[in-house]
Length: 113
Length: 119
Image 1 (cartoon, rainbow over the protein chains, first blue to last red):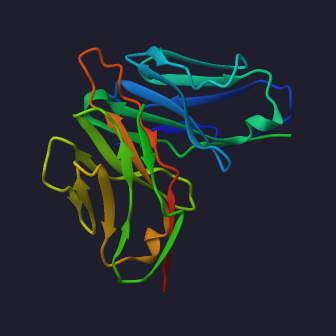
Image 2: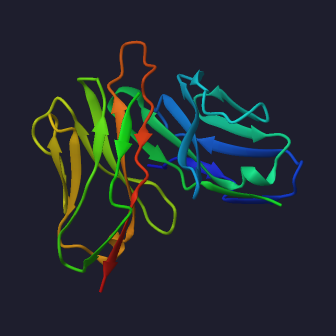
């Protein structure tokens, strides 16, 4: 079975540019999570969806960040405009709600110059 | 709010030996899940083992087992017969048991323990 698929694997872009990260959850999973990982702050939950509906976005750092889940098989995390402090590894994870145990994608390493 | 504490930032073990990683948590919930995740240098986050709080029996997955002490709010991970491939950051995580509304599926992570297995 395919796991959680994230793209791109790496992204390098200049400050001020728009960045879009993509995620395809495991088929049949109904919860999807976006995380950010840095050395300083560790693993932070940005937002999560249940049945395509955003449930908790309290971890989204500021208005420059937005996330959508138009259907059960696709989600995006967008940063506009990007800043150097957004450099991090961004993970997407999915789970079958009640069973817990989130399955993570391989992450996107984002570098903002 | 839940908190998860991993008091050992780094540990090392010789290949083939056994090592135990500590995790404690604080919650007022009575029903919840606990997890251990492994993050090797490749940066993947891999689910190692899962424990449901209402189950008294400790979970086991091959060489990985847990010691779940609910009253003490302790959830340690034991790795037997350590292998070089076990070198990774290990994260303990907590999740409330979901209610019928399905809105409580967030994981709370500890800060991790970096385990190095030496040849």
